[in-house]
Length: 320
Image (spheres, rainbow, N blue to C red):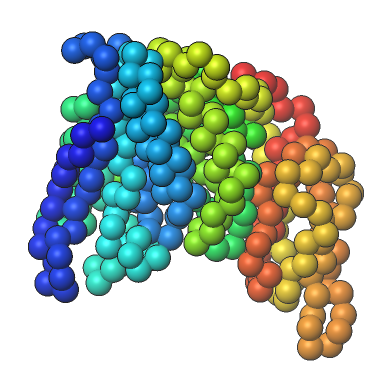
C-alpha cells in the first residue's frame, strides 16, 4: 500500500489538513482497470468512511497474502473532507461550504473549492471507475441504494447491479447536481456510482457489511481483483423516476413509525402515526399509498406539515 497526499494546507489551528489516497498497485505495470473509492465529502456521513476502512483493511491483508490477485489498481480516498469530519459537520467548518457543490469550473477560488477540484483532477487522472459513498441526512434512513442520473443510466446500471444494494434509483437531472463529484466525473466519461445508505452521524454495521461485499463483487467482476471466492450478492430493484411513491405529513407533530425499513408493504398498510404529545391525540395515521418496498423512512420524529415520511419503490419495479 502506498500513501499519497492529494492536497494539503497548514491550518492556523494546528497541523496540516490533507486529502490522503491509499493506492494498491496492480501486479503488472499496466493495470487492467483503475478504481477509486471516495468517502467523507460530507463530514457527517460516516457509513462510507467505515466502508473504506473495511476495504483498506481487506486489501492490505490481500496484498500481503495474495498479491497476484491485483490485476488492476485500487485507490481509496477514505476522508476527503477532514475538516468537516473532525467537526462531524456536513459543511466545511468556518466557511460553511458544501464540498460536493464545488466541483468543476466557475465555483470560485475558496479553499474548499480548491480542495474539491484537486480531488476531482486527481480522480480524473487516475480512475476508470469511481464509487462515491454517501449517507442520508438526520431526518431519513435509507436502505443501501445507488442513485443514477438518467442520462448516465446506460453505462452505470450494469456496474450498479454488481454492488449488492437493495435498489438502483434512476432519477432526472437537476441543476443542483451540476457541481457534484459524481456528475462531473460522469460527464468526463468516468463511470461513477453514487452510493447512499443509512443515516448521517451513525454507522449501521449490517448496511456497511452489505455494501462492502458488493464492492468486493464489483472489484472481482470488473477484473480488478481475481478473488478465488467472491461474495454472493443479490440483484437490486431497478426503480425508474415514476416508480417511487413519496409520503408526506399533513400535520405537524411527532412521527412514530410502526414498521421497519426494508419491509414490503401493501397499499393501505399502516406505517405509523403522527401524534400530538400535548393533547394526547393521534392527529394522523400514515398508511402506504402503494404496494412496494419501503426504502426510505423518517428517523427524526419531530415533523412539520409537508415533511417527507417515507418513500416506496413500487412493486412493479423490474430488475436490471
